[in-house]
Image (tube, rainbow, N blue to C red; front, side, top):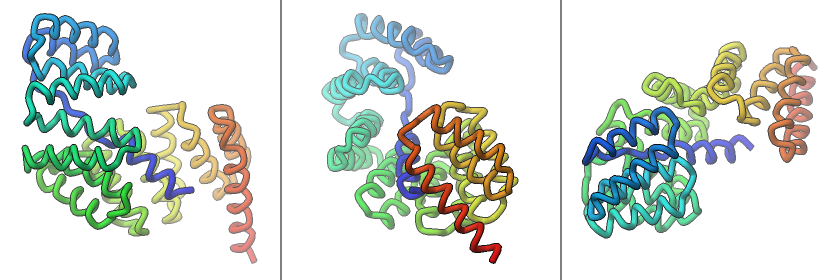
Length: 279
């Protein structure tokens, strides 16, 4: 179950970057995005495209907004348009690869990040995104090399540390995973999944109080993630704080009732391990 969760974590770590604005409206559009008013930002981008129908950056920036808004088909069309106007638009290939990855089209995603790196061999986000794709295709060592290269090019790229931490955790290298999730948090204090994953590492290390602090922070950042309540509940259970554990398990199922069977199995396994230690 942990391994599947880690693969899902990689999904949210794909880097999406925004090009420098071509006009005041483009700049205003990206500032609206920072305030989560994506619909208004998209309207601004529509106006930009009306006046600049041959601007690849205009389509690219609207594609970013649509991608963040979850309108993947429309975002894909905008990236296609940007690439059609500017075939050597590295960041457009990177972001289009993110959509292909989310659709499970791994070969297409890999082709796009490879093309981005042909255009710009120092594109750090392209390396870490290729690492995510390579990992999904089973090439763990290739993925690790890509994340290392991304960090070499951009030592403050939080997603590269996060993704490398996921790989280290999958390999059982807890110390390296802990260091990478901590670095990811240092450079992106609002990266919720970094707290969740660091919490999982701390549980595995037996540092349950520190793990609880990380789960608390993750819930403060996003209270709608059912697996975080499950993880925190398991930490409470291991500490013998059954009441708090049960409340978290109940909240987990309120958010996603489909987890009932797996949650019950995890609780049963944890209790059996606790009984075995007492003998």
